[in-house]
Length: 128
Image (cartoon, rainbow, N blue to C red; front, side, top):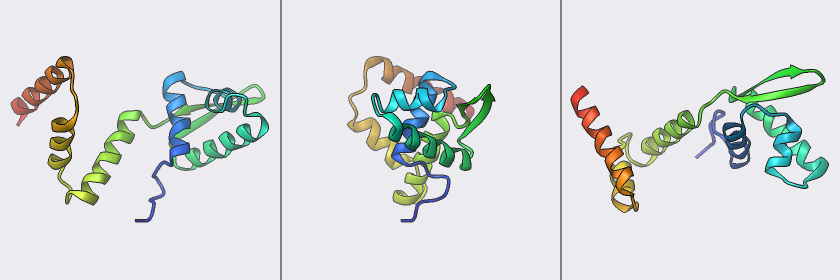
C-alpha cells in the first residue's frame, strides 16, 4: 500500500517523540537527544526530518536569534487516532471493534487500566 503524504515514518516519529517529551527544541538539541555522539551527520539527518515534518505541517519553527526552535504541531493523540483509523479502514472494513476487542482481550491490563476502561465505556454509554 502506498504511503500517504501525511504518514509519518519511523525516523520522523522519533523526532516528534522527542518534541512531545521535551517541548520546543533546536536541531542541535534534538540531534543530541536522538543520536547521542552522532556529530554532523546526525545534525543533517534531524534537519532533513524536520523539513519533511514541516512540509507535512506536523512541526512549526520560529527563529530565536540565529537558530530555529521547532515545536510539534500534531499531538501524540492525533497521530494515534489517525493510525488506528487507518488500520481499522485497511484491516477491519472501518470498524474499530475488532481491533479494540483484540487489544483489550490480549493485553495484560492493570487494575487501574481496567477501571479507566470501565469508566470510559460507562461515560460513552451515557452519551449514546
